[in-house]
Image 1 (cartoon, one colour):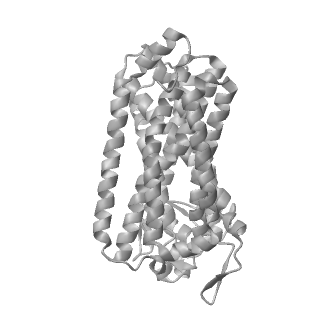
Image 2 (tube, one colour):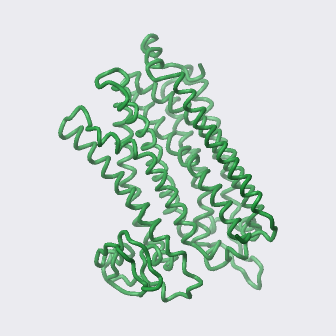
Image 3 (tube, helix red, strand yellow):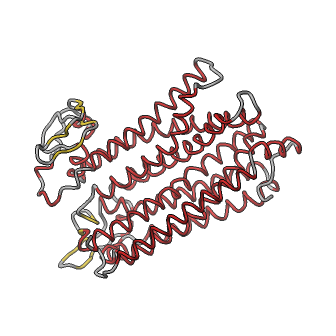
Length: 452
């Protein structure tokens, strides 16, 4: 492999690993907040126990997310000096503000952990709201750099020099709000369905009607409710994202749908794979006119095909598969939430069938896969550009060689971190099963302190 491929692989591996913890770091605080609100409204100690247990899991995940995020920042400087030169002059604002967002998150999480039983209930809610806002702001600010890469704004390059820099225009680039929305909504989906996975699995391992079964049943239902709502909102946001691609990155949309010829009433290709030789999506299902409507809310919308661009500007055609996998998983999660609601609320069934419970167990891993597919699609679909139509990936990569050994070392570090975090979580929660915390809370008739 040449150094460009190794550099992309190294940074892609870093982000693929880090994004799991970063996403959960946004989604889980919202679920903690929901559980805390439920406790304050119902005085049901189960919700207090949920909030405390999820907080401890969040602390472990945050402990891994911080160093992997630091590694990603270091790699940006080491591997992509051409890119960082532009970012340093034009788009440094998000990195600067993100420091304060993380400070807010860490400060108020400390207050909730160590002082929750010493402050008023409304102050606990406020603390968690600020934790959720801080975590979300960190994610939005960092991914805004990615939004800028796809829709650059706020500067010009004249005779090879960066001029007319407007940091705020760069910050509020054309895809900022859509990208920020997608980051937030999808993170809440992952956070809720990941906890739902644990709850469903524990219900399968517990006796129906037992105290532990009831505890996890409450957890599962609020997770499916939150996850279902945000899955639906993510789908709506995805429609807006497609329209931004149609307006600003048409070849990326064409590659996502395997469309080669510019046309109105363009079909939407579901499934299959893109064949560059025959220039068609093989074994896919075409929905007539749907792509034109998706792109411009009208069947008459003209969608530009790949053949209108030089072939060297085409994104890799496998992004069609990534896009379909992301959308397919998102649709499945919406369906799971709807089925759960109908079964439990409309049909008044107290117990889900085993096949459906296993589907809930699969929901968390599938949501994480959807995040990975979406991230790879977003970055790979922008190729061959680091900054769209301004800076190519080839021109932004480091000229240093011998990256192969470094790549192997980083992958080894991630493997160790992954195993470590799993072992720590398993060790802690096996030593502290939910019945232990439930009994402690019920015996004292109050919510248990986190700092014990």
